[in-house]
Image (cartoon, rainbow, N blue to C red; front, side, top):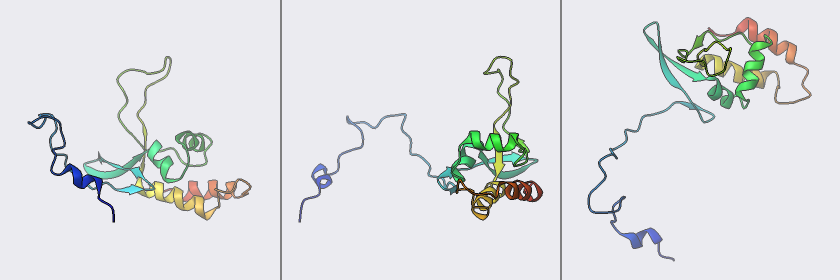
Length: 142
């Protein structure tokens, strides 16, 4: 039986000195909804709070990159997203119209995850891409 090193420290404060820092308030812990470690945020759409995932977080859920989702959207394999964040005030790239980030609902992200499993798209030799495209476009959740 060994001695726990933390027991040697006793009741030391979490900060140096005799007074606690002014800028460290207690953090409120808020329950966060996650799928595969991806965090969602609530956005108000037409007066209703809707749980949404940015394109990067949606990519985490389906184990793909955001650029893969953009490519699927550009090639028509999945429908274009209906929701975006507000556009930035200035263009970040010259000669490019500023747009907001793509947002996906929880239903859309779960739909994509189920489609990837259903059509075995994790297998590089899978021949089900046409079936995936047709199914995704016809059954895409709004």
